[in-house]
Structures are given as structure tokens and as C-alpha cells.
Length: 314
Length: 310
Image 1 (cartoon, helix red, strand yellow):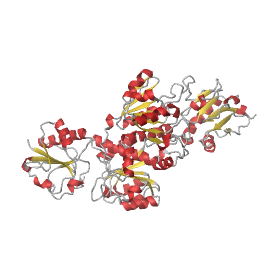
Image 2 (cartoon, one colour; image 1 turned 90 degrees about the vertical axis):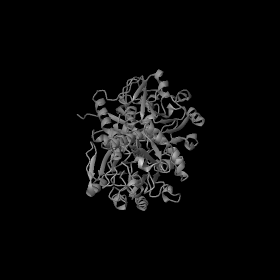
Image 3 (tube, each protein chain N blue to C red; image 1 turned 30 degrees about the vertical axis):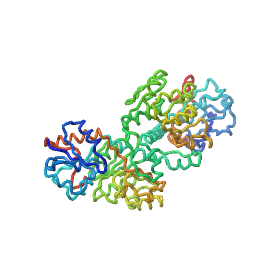
Image 4 (cartoon, rainbow over the protein chains, first blue to last red; image 1 turned 120 degrees about the vertical axis):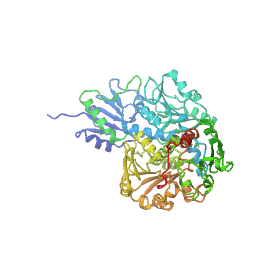
């Protein structure tokens, strides 16, 4: 008797299905991977490996048991209005991605701390001028979100001698990092922060968290770095705060609309550095083992690792 | 108590005198050229003191270089060789230097200039991935500053190896020595970080022959001394793709003249010799410590070996 293996659905506008299939087949040689939209019989599919699957499609997969996000974020799954309630949701927790993200955050923190925008301006004018040097231990970096990514970044920034604090919904302990948590401690956390880095998951509670109110609690001349989601920032509030001088600069990798529309004021703004969502990309090479493990577990009826809490949405 | 003479290049030494007196209010510090009786001077704290001046102090016991580099003293024919020379060993400065390298390694790695060019054209190009595992930093010079850099690079998760004149034993860092060792290290280094001291042996060491020993498309970062790099060789290596990008803090001619071709070369990140910023209060602590030690006849910290030149 031939045992028919359930199928895996693949969908992503950013990732190569060929590369993923090649990598996954090293662990599951007889993998039946169906690349959207050529999915054959939807009832064969029990596992979905997806990034931003167009809405309305999960409900068509009657035998679906697990949705795995092709990235650290799962907000693209929770925006689905007809999300089947019995399906497990998991995300990738890729150490390669955490390292890449920490490097990107470190780069932004060092750029602002070392006055790179000011020096680049001087360089364009061929001007040799040394600005008063900043003192690292007096530079307070604040990380919003102390999940896998936030913790890694906070520890690495602290290792460079910065004064680092973190804020998260629930209490956390990170060595060398002053930890704040909950709504009540957000204000004192912001009050002491000179460079604010957002690495939060996107949930209904974190949407628009960087707004006029929160910005007002940051000291004048602060910087904002966002690698969470574009929806964490209320763009008009940030632009207004930059115009008023309250915020001295911003480095953004994520936007409310991606690709960022060419008429958006961020593009040409001298105090905003736009990155095209490249801070940390998922990598088939380092993540395949984890996905293969999850597929194996789900097909054998076990629960995969890194499940997402549906209520908290992360 | 004897007096201390201070000279800080073109800059006023006022803030230093204030910081030194904060550490020890009993120090008598006089700024060059108004140092009073030369017989009363036992310590000279200097950066770019005019050559010949050091020979005017018959009772000099100690020369302190106000920066990590000591070539400005050793190249002075009037420097009395029997007087010990110490360099600045400021932990803040070492950290500042390490930050400069880390930031510029990451800038080069993330191809900042590539993204900047897209940004000007408003092009969204997210398809490029970054291979973090591919970074291997090779440090030339594992002295006070080089060792600090190596440790910080390890702490943030990057691969590090180092080359120095004498063998070093640092945990987690492959260490090389000698000419063969340098060739060996260069084979697997794609980010070369130069922190060598300025000696006759290091002059012109960063040349086309050395670049060709690295993998094609490597990166160069120099915060040692300007004369360690053969500038035309870098332009040549950038043109033929052997070197993909560079970050330079030191130059043969400083300030770099406006006509210098590096200014317009988008493949080179230029900073005006500010990689290692001295943080005066912490530097002052280390300086006062050595002044006390020399006056009590104790051993000195950061003593320069004049035979090898650093």
C-alpha cells in the first residue's frame, strides 16, 4: 500500500520556492510542495509555509493544520478575516535572522551616535572638520520589544558600552539591560531614551505605538529606528516631530505601505534614512532545518516549536 | 613640586588642564610656550610639539603622548632617548576606535552607498540578502586598540582573526605572526582592519601586493596611519575590483586637500581622523596615574619600546 504524504503549500512574494524546495528536500526527500497558485487538490494540504498569502484562501484548505510564517512576524496571518480557528500558527525563529537584525540595529545606532549624517554632509562639501565627540556611556539606547530579536540586539548594543534599556509587555530579564514592562513603565522608559529602536511584533496593542504622545516623552534631539512594522509608526506624528526638532533623525526599514510610494515625504527627507525592508531577511539556508522539523511534527500529529499565542498575536 | 609642560598640537590645552586638576588639584600644569623655568619641568605631555623643544628640559623624567600614536615624539631628533615615553591608554578611546571599525564594517557590508544611490532614485530593491556568515575581519596590529576591537567584534557575533609582530593569545581569535602568517591570514580575510603603529616597518604596508593576497572583492579599513596605505594602489585595486570598498580615517595629507581624488570616490568612506575620540576625563585619570608613578619611581603603564617604535 502506498502511503500518501500530505502536501505543503508555499507562497511568498519575496522568497524563492525553488530554493526552499531544494533545502527542505534535504531533510524530507519525498516532500510534496505545492507552489501557489498551482496547488492541485486543496484538501491535500496540511501545512502552509507562507508570507502574505492573499486574503480569503486559508478557509479553502479544509485539512490545514499549521501555518508557518516565512518570517519572524505573524501579523500578515492575523489580518486574514477568515482564519480557521483550529489551525496552529508558528513563526520562524532563525538565529541567522537575529544576528542580521542586530547588525542592522547596531549600524543605525552607531550611525546616529557617531554623527554620520552630519559628517556625510561635511564630506559632500569636501570639508575636513571634527565635531565634538559623543560619550558612549551617556548615550541611552532603548529597545521596544524584548523578544528573540530585541534581546539579541539589546545584548549586543550593551556589549559596545552603550547604556541600554528595553521595554516589553510582560516583565523580562536581560543581562546588562535595564528592563521596563507594561503600560505604566513605558513613560519612564521613553524619558531616559536617546535612540529608540522598535523591534515589537505588530498586534492590535502595538499598532501606532510611536505617535505624538509617546514621542513627546522622548528627550528633545532623540532618534527613532524602526525595524518592527511600518504600522508601529504614525507617519504624520513622526514627520511633525522631526520638523519641530524634537526628533533629530530616523532610520526606517518598514513602512505603512511597501514599497514606499515614490511621492512619500520620507524619501527625500534629509533626516530620514529609508531602507527597503532589508534589515533581516529569512534565509532558506539556515531556516530549512527548523521548517522541516515542524512539518515532520505536524504530519505525525505532534505540536511544532515556536507556536504563536493567538490571543496576543505573537 | 616640579612642573608639567603641556602642548596639544594646534588646540588649547585648557580643558585638559582642568580635567587633570580635577583628578589631582596639586599638579602645576603650564601650557607651552609659557612653561616658565625649563629646569622645573619633569613631565612633558605632548601632541605634535615642535621638534627640538623636548631637549630644553634638563630634568625631564617622562614624556606622555596625548594620543595612541607616538611617532610624533620618536621622529623628533631632539627627543632625549633616555627619558621614558608612554602613550595614552584610554579605555574610552579604545572603545571609540572599535565603534568606528564596527560601524564601517557594517556600512560596507550592508552596501550603504548602494542603497543610498537607490534612495536618490527612489527605487525599492529589497531582493538582496546579506550573508552575515561571510564576514571575517582580519586585524593588523593587536596592541591595546587592536585587542579591544577584536573582543568587541567577537561580542557582536562576528568572526575575527589578527596579525601582530609578536604572537598573541586571545580567546576566540586566530592569531598570526610574521610575514608568512600575514599571507595566511589575508587568504581568509575579507574585511581588513589596520590598526598598526607608525614605524619604518609598517610604512606602505597596505599596497597592491597585499590586496592581491586577499579574496577578490574584499574591503579595507584603515585607522592606523595615513602613510601605511599606498593611496594610488587603493584606487587601482578599487578599479579592478580586487577591493570592493574602503573606509579611511587617516591620510598621507591631513586635512585631505579638496583636490584629492578620494573625496569624489563613492567606494570610499572618509572620516576626518576622528575614529578614536579621546574622552578627556577618563584619559586624564590614566595620565595622572603615570605622573604619580614616575615621581615615586614606580613602573609605568603604556611604556613605549623605542627599539621597535611603539
